[in-house]
Image (cartoon, rainbow, N blue to C red; front, side, top):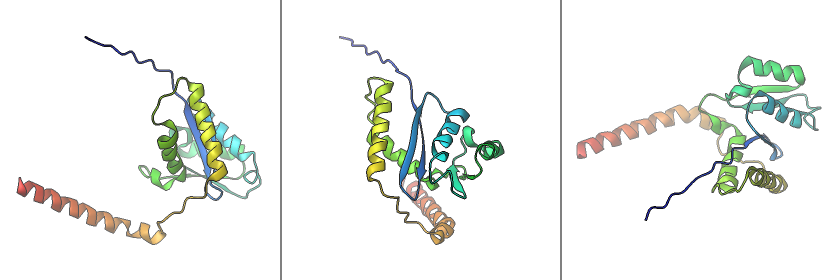
Length: 174
């Protein structure tokens, strides 16, 4: 007997968030899509609240996504607010941005498994998790130091050398 299964895709939700690293506070929003307008709505959501509105500088650490990439994004923020400083992470270095740690938590605890009946349920679960997170979270404790970062190239070289030696051994053993 043959059984067919039909899968119906109910759409997608773009979850944009900013993370205050000192207070372990998340500012999130669910949007229909990503882009400049949703990103600027997130910036507006954060930058119109204290302490950000009156801070001397507010650093926005971002990846190289198109909605906040390059000089145009810097100019866009500067034309709207006097104090944001946009800092772009190096390509393939999302691990230096603490919001990415939060997104990995969301992926494991909220989104997976993806058994939602509709997009409203996704939005509700994201908002509920954000509320619980903001009520209980503590700032992430980084274990890396600047000297660890300085030592990184040498550690990578040692690791690469070890990998090459193991590959050579595996080839010789074959």
